[in-house]
Length: 471
Picture 1 (cartoon, rainbow, N blue to C red):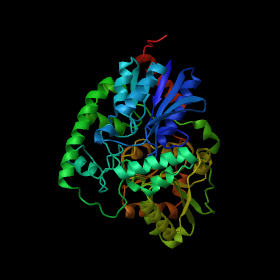
Picture 2 (picture 1 turned 120 degrees about the vertical axis):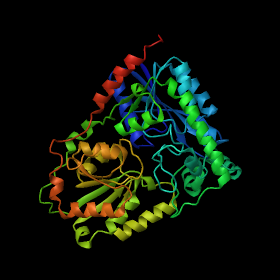
Picture 3 (picture 1 turned 90 degrees about the vertical axis):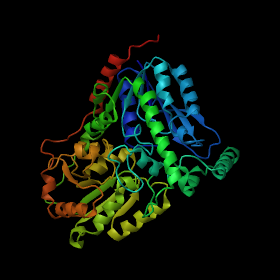
């Protein structure tokens, strides 16, 4: 079969969980004899126009839209005719039997309609809440509170602070930087992104206090959120033959939203276990050397690194003297938050050595005595947790969503109240003072699903749902 995977970003420039899973799936399907291609997007606000780049990753053809985020209105953040036109052209060229959507951020909901219109069988893996939540699919309000239910008035106060289009000055600047790159080969796009804090879509503000939105703007965005919700229910949901969710928590939230339970299946994200099989954690019971505690992920507020650093600073000095904390990850394009983290790390005596290459993850993970995942949003099935489970690395995670579902207390780790620094401090203190508790974890060995098994189940679904219609 000809399979087209659709994702908001893709490897190697973007290596978060959805992108890594999509890459593993592409290779797994190709190993089973299928023709696989990827349709994706990348952000570049210096581009004068939306464009297409054709490339390959590990031999897999990749069609990448360069999205300059020049949205004329909020609707274009989820229904973009320019993206639709490019996607339709690629559908005609690739003629896939299966179109498997992983994410639509930076793309367009119209892609789903076009795929179904082209007689491909459409599947959609729900990696987060993007269909329900326009602000990066996190169901996290900029005031720091979780959105436990969909409330359009609350969406209005959130989205009225949401940067979704460029000002005239920003567009002129982007055009100038694009011309500079074309003319003399100087690429200042990354510098521009860091300088213009608001150019990216979304992100939780880094200020200590969140200011209430203007009432008129909030009312306008309340209507926009309701319109988006209705349109996605009408234009996306009916065309998807099967929704897939890597956590039961996500299944429940989308059934609440109105997806027929018969059309949504729980399918855990697989992991390339071969990369981790030689890196199982083996630490001497005595823990004579300092305990190694780690964080791996984007250093952004919704991932909670600030809470981990605050909790570490609150530990008794006697406990910190026999332990080391290292936070690995890419900093967001928000200088204020980056400075805040640096100050917290210095005060806590923690290390911030920067990102970790994908090839280094198994060895680094296996070297830890404890991995902390302190996210404050409803994480679905974080790849970092799956990797820890594969290496038998003890976990300390927020008691939210898929994180709580994946980590069984006293089997693979410990859970604590999300965003609660005293609770995190208490959990860390207990584990550092009694490291023998860590040695008793994983009585049944590694706990994870091989990507090969997940891919074979998908192949069964593809054959069941998608009768090839093209020669």
